[in-house]
Length: 333
Ligand SMILES: [Zn+2]
Image (cartoon, rainbow, N blue to C red; front, side, top):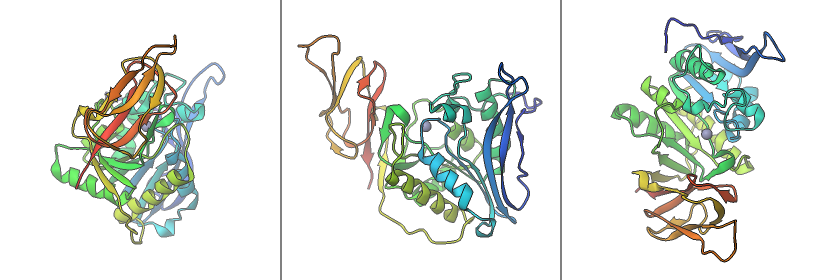
């Protein structure tokens, strides 16, 4: 990253002005059908006086919908009178991917959540990452990035934090995750964290919360309600919005090591033998993969490498070698 290079994104909103502003992060994008065109990323800023800043994002992956729905509603409904401090709302973070209904950008195939810290002179996706990393995250005290499983995964609805080298920061992240108060709360293990938004925000010392609220490439009344309630709770927790958190029970989950993940080593037809939220015993069959090229062949059985709750599963009916079939997480306490 070259700090001397300015990011070409310009904001049509003034992050220092009080009131409600709806505008765009304008990213110049020259192409065949628009020589001096731009990718227009919608942004809302709600500010009143001095106080903490929350940066709220959805659509980091373009096929996950709880964040975009909940944050579109928040941007429309939250008034400056309700706020002490500032709320920055970006419901469709990777706007090109979101418009295409895809995880990654159709412009450059960029997976935004594997593109951090980004580059000011890189691809469209890298420019978005760089703008968040060097412009928006530094403005924030607390950062919430709402994910779900997208088209290929389905999750138990959970808010999550990570194990961090700074234990004080980890405690603050855990407190914020609990305040989101999803039905499940996860200490999440990432297999590929280096270039994630999460890591970029955590390295800047921010209180960071992420979620996985469902999946399958859509949202439900229940999963959207969890997102909306979680966002409000988090703003109350941060001291930005007044009110009380009406605490509901949450199941604490942990992913202590890579044995939580079960990956397919075959292509084929997926038979899930257990469903999300069910108690799994170590060694039991969670899924079978059937041959789709012939009949009469025995399916391959996939057994749990640890006990716990089934927290995530492959969503489509067909599976490829290398796909994550299932995640089993340990219940804590
Ligand atoms: Zn995601």
